[in-house]
Length: 299
Image (cartoon, rainbow, N blue to C red; front, side, top):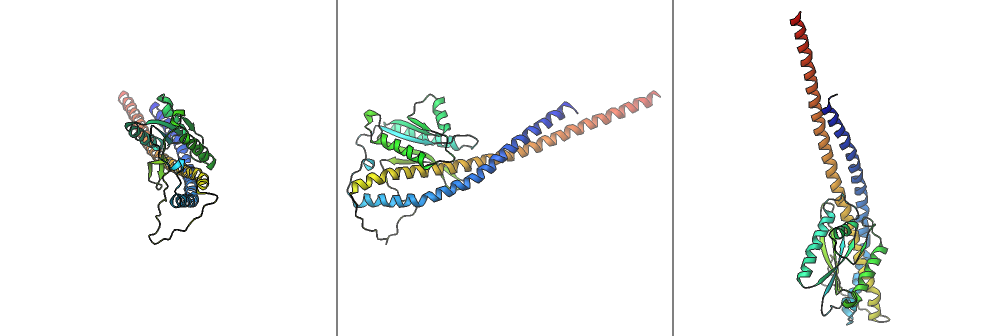
């Protein structure tokens, strides 16, 4: 066997091994993204009910709660950046980071100091490589986030929002995450979390809908104290779930593309190997014919 043939066959084996890995990762991501979509749907009823409850308190009481009150002099803004822990997910993390860079530029142009809070090792690596400072980081869960993690992140952001700026607090909180639209489309999005802007969701109330009357016990202030932190946690949890579904969908697409490319490479190298083999056979036949002719001439 010629040296060229050995090289081609070695490359074919190498690409076949890579193809097995990418195919397995594609199938794993495909199975997980269905569960991730289901988790997003399952979290919606609770988030919707909590949103309506908070809206009711905000509408039927004149309470100024710290989490809903705009700060007079906005100097520091927190940005929670949600990326993935692992790569091989196409442009998922880089798109979220690019969107966060755009937001950071806007905030700085408005004269605000930006304090990054990072989710996922990709965001941490991005900031560490450029030797940029950040407040804190969370990682190790991006493709399967839990409610406890969302609560931990929410408590930290609420605590820093309630703390005076001179003591390391912030005046507003933004979240950069990837919104899951469908299996084909995932869009980097920005959400201002604090001060709270209560969002009803995708389903606006009907024009003739009669809103119920509420009585708050023990008081509207205490109801808000109980509900608003839960509302923040629910919104963060929803963002993490959508980001997880987006990450898995991006990984499935990226691995399918890699598998398809591997198949094309295998076809290409097989064709080249066959051409090399045919060239060797032709050369051998020519040598045999040449030798036979030389013997015939000699005799």
